[in-house]
Length: 405
Image (tube, rainbow, N blue to C red; front, side, top):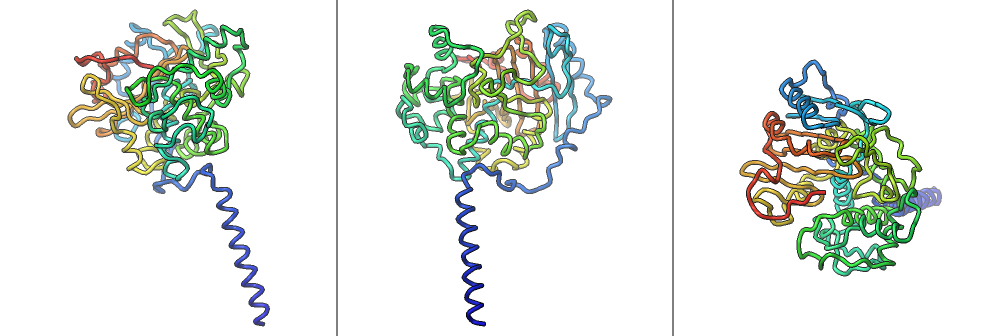
């Protein structure tokens, strides 16, 4: 009997040991953990909206913006956890006269950066990286010294803009512009050609897409999975974002969405995706106004990050512009006495957006446009109606660089 007991005990210990080893071997930071906050998260209830109850003042403003300023896109306004206005206005594809629908997917352009930064901070919480890790830890042939994840998150790396560097390279060498580059291929081009940086690391804020393309590459390197897969498993699905995907021209011959970007404020300039729609992290996420509302709710509910981690992303990491504007970890920041709006803009291949989250007063505004014009600079009335501060750099006096993405 004692002999049998020893065999059973030995077997039990062995199974436990093997299970522990297997768990450690598979734990590479790619599996989504249990939600930071395990409270119920009802995405269906959050999306509840009856157009009959739409805020009539906001509807009047948006219709006037469409009529006089050419706004074409989708809009959502929410206050205190409830949608008060939602609408699809105009064409998804002017050439084919396809109308926008409320669940139409837009290329988020630089609004993607808010989710890339969230993914990086997730990996930080899981112990898979440090904000002070050098890029060379992940890419030994990276040609620049002294660039850390923290500097990438805050646009202080001093890197050149890979978009212009790669575009010039493709044009001068007559390369195939229809096939999209992967992040790994873009990183290899940078390693090979060593384009000259704009300035030394941590000298000043210099917004450009290279920072978040490199962060997207680091996510792939650390997790061992495509950026698209990691984002879906760890951000989109836990947030209930059923209409959000990462689409890269390196994977898709034709991006499978119906919304076409129109550039220069004119319908005749419809934009076809090319090789620059391959790299992701700086852009490449396609989503809806509703899913961005759910992303806001998931962040507030603590489903993605701990509160202290999220708060660290909302700290101004660059000098204030006009006394109100700065940039944190993947988020633009507006601050005024008693007010803080966390937001991001986007501008890419005929798409132009603004995504705003009033942290203190719990107001969310999402405007996604596929006709790139100046209509999103005429939102003062909407901010007033929603109860949000005017988030527009030229509305404030002061000196400084006002360049946007």
